[in-house]
Length: 314
Image (cartoon, rainbow, N blue to C red; front, side):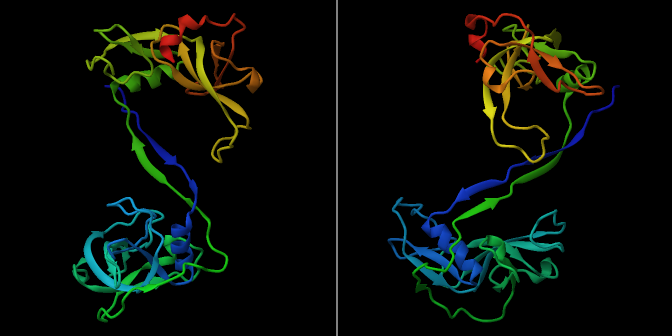
């Protein structure tokens, strides 16, 4: 039996967004140790605040300050924190309804163990020592023995030097283990060959193979070697440099229909100025020494493919 392939993979996308007046006031308030909610038309105070009523879709702008103390409405214990989670030691994920609010805020509770956590317990915010205008300005919640005393009060939402934009890091670390079909595809690539699988029903050849036809829903097993040359069907010009890729911008990323395949795969186009790449361009793979997949595709010098030859693969 061949070895099972596996590899650690990271999917990371730092999302940059601008803030409207409500979210700007909320995050700037956290920087100033102030928690703001927004009041709906029926008098409820939503924390975190939203810009539109989730029930009526009415635009919401009436900001109100709530307390930094609250009550746990539900919780779950996290015995093994992962990298970049709020606390390094085991903690509880909690939904906390702050005093003066009608909805609960998701955050973490610093507690010695699950036996110290219960629904209905009183907690308060522990502020981060250095605050920048982000949800992490709340370092965590901690147990608090006080009673509910605070009511919400109106707030203008005006602060000096308001936060107008944020970068939200999104990252997923996992181990990928391909199945039979993709393992055969990857092993063939290491031999500088491209292998797909043919559907026994519609007879289309899919590259990369998934072990089943996405159209007919039947298993595929017949291997078919395709390419190595192919045709650019569609493409885009990349103008923003990715920090993890040592490729100078601008460059072209394209969908390439390899000869004999009925599904276009994607790859980078090189060996030609980016503004000369076009639909129908005939290309071939370029392999680096020891590489397990094509580094990029370059023009073959053949005449461009006729549109009718690839229009079904767009």
